[in-house]
Image (cartoon, rainbow, N blue to C red; front, side, top):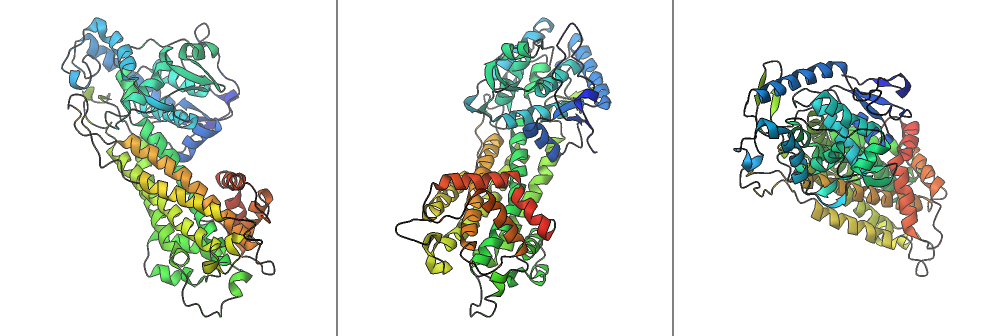
Amino acid sequence: MSSEFRAAADSKPPGDMHPGEDGEGDKTMKEEIVVHGEGFELEELVRIARHGAGIRISEESVSRIHKARELIDRWVKNGERIYGVTTGFGALSGVTISYEDTRELQKKILFSHSAGIGKNLDEDVVRAMMALRVNDFCRGNSGLRLETIEKLARLLNEGIVPLVPEKGSVGASGDLVPMAHLSLVLIGEGEALVDGKRMTGAQALRKKKIRPLALEAGEGIALINGTQLMIALGCLALHDALNLCKHADIAAGMSLETLMGTRAAFDPRIHRARPHKGQILAADNMLRITANSEIISSHKDCSRVQDAYTLRCSPQVHGASWDAFGYVDKVIRVEMNSSTENPLIFPESEEFLSGGNFHGQPLALACDFLGIAIAELANISERRIERLVNPQLSGLPAFLVEDGGLNSGFMIAQYAAASLVSENKVLAHPASVDSIPTSANKEDHVSMGSIAARKCREIVANVEDVIAIELLCAAQAMDLFTNLKAGDGTLAAYEVIRSRVGYMKEDRILSRDIAAVKELLLGGSIVRAVEDKVGKLY
């Protein structure tokens, strides 16, 4: 299902924004994405998390939400035993809570589960968590009041970003700890960022003229019992990993040229003989990126029989990672549009069921796999960097600088890449193979999915730096072929890099150059320039 977009001026305000109650809200929102509980796309989530788009609950979701809440109210009044609604939590689920205490129970669960540790999550992660949680609630299985869901959506739309410590979740019973910290702001507790300023939750609500929420029966457990930290981190890591795919192929193509490699290994007949999809697409990318290269043509009759694996096998290595990303993408898209709380309300049959959809195992495995697959891109990239700076392997000036000795050139750039690659090898150890029982052994197998997701995102950031270093070194090497034209795609990439970072004739502070190329990588300008010349890369 495609999402609907509306300008803020034409949009209907959330239902909790009535005259005399809450303020009118932020009128400057540029884009509003309607969420349905299904069909939510990764690209839409990124626009919400990083580019200020807002969300609105679909009309069809409102009906489902109301029906589920009516059932909760009826069951509570009738004295039904419902986990987390009229009982305690975890190992205390055998304790029955009186009707009079059900509201107090929901407030206490937010307080008791707000046990987070460490630095606060980045703003884009928290915004993604909020959007994903609202989309989950739109499926109508949570039993939350519409007012509560709309209030969470409004916090997101108004730019209130709860402060959420990154550590404390074991990835089963959902991400209880981070979701509790996020939900505190709804009731005027906790802390938040508003317009970049840190303040209490109560101050944040007052600043945006929003009244604190009074939780009703079952709402505390519904707010915190989901996988939204894992999925938010996984979504953003996957998006950034997919952005790296094309840059890795471009960097490999530039390195191939300047290391006097051959395009023969990219011949489609080779890859059709072993038809892994990623391998075929990566080979096609590199074939087109290096098309019409005078540098490669200049040595077609040389005596070298085969290139090193980091050049010759780059489609096989890159392509295997592409295929891994495809698996992760399938898991992510299912999880983005799932109900992950407990219990689940089924309005159609007027039933509630307790299960384990909060367990993070699918995400834990996927994030571990993504971390391993993306780390491999840095592994092979760093080896190409070494070949570029090592005169015994490249035939180029040592460390790609003309006056070596007085200048160290790109010697330490390779050190930095090696450091990041080594760190990734530690981070890539899977978190999902571990489990420590919690809640008096009631929760006796946990996924550690939040740890897998946090590690994965860190690996992606490291790989971005390594690919940026390869692009930087390859551009420097390309300058040493002053009389020969580079390939169509590699020349386009070179020109974008040189628009920000000049040729290094003598030593200068390299971290600034690396950061500048990484900024180009993150902004997509290198890929756009290459695609303008060679067509869409896969």
